Image 1 (tube, rainbow, N blue to C red):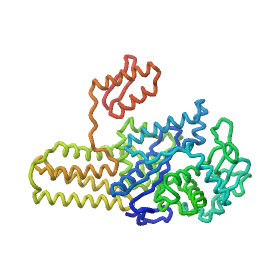
Image 2: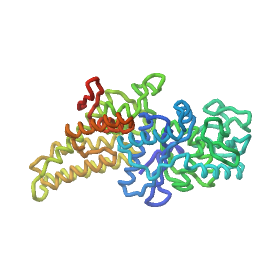
Image 3: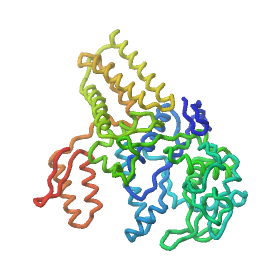
Image 4: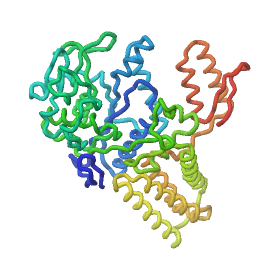
Length: 463
């Protein structure tokens, strides 16, 4: 299996730190709002990477954090007049709802930054003791130039980096390139006691600490969006390797950017979409299928036309599986012709695996599934042997599962069930339990039932 390692800028053979096991850390979202479709890409991509390792028999320890203390969270909390924890807990739940809709598997551990403060203080103290960090007026800075390998991930030369690029210039710093490990308390912000005074951690330290705690000093894979290469992942390497005295991660995987109609996604341009907004127009399985239609390192363009094409492609696969589910097949042994079909199935499984083992080329893996569907449509019918039907059907379903594509049909809600849920929603609204009312609306929307509140009452229709 070959992985493209951002650290070396080339494909490398995957050799785990510990045989048969994969320790994998994926940077999760900052929870101040609903996750957007840019957040969804690494969630889907690296969930698929995890699924493939598990398919190949590896024991995967998959850690993905929630950043639940941050300037944006604090700003939103102050706007609403609530503690920051209210905002972060709300959007952690919303993120989990969206991840479930995207069929992203639950992480082995989902640590939260606010629950790992003691570990961050310990690592910061270690860095101070080793001479890699220093404190000024309650702020602790990392001495970037002291770490000889700084820039090895991003391939940036420290002398060429200007202080204005995402790095605040401060007269307190020994060097403009030094970055914050701990910041002192400000009015209206959450804080924790530390040897340097009450305050809160900088952004980068949390991932170094959580990775060490849940995966160990040296891990196999660290992953995230390419926007995290610098400064976040570069700073993680500097912190972790200086504190632990060992290489941090063997392989660094980064997914490409997502554009909207060939333009970078931006709130100011009005082309910014949350996963929740997309779920109102499409089944989130379509979004997942779309995300896997391109190689993860390639830039990906989101558009209505491409989503429509993904919807059609997914339906082609699901229709084929549904047809195979309905075919009983006949008793008896495989014919020579059927054995030839099974040989072709095995060839396509190899094509799928070869694609995935070439730096997780999901685009080619999807192509292999389409070839399987075509093979099934041409060669499998009610006259086929039950053995052939089962082999083809189970193979398509198994490979789809590796990609996180759900092939089981959901039972369709009956009209009476819908009416009961609408009545429950109305009762919840009357009791001012708006969270439950919204949950019911989302539940129905996920199953293709759209509600409309009118003067005459609630009306519903199937999407």
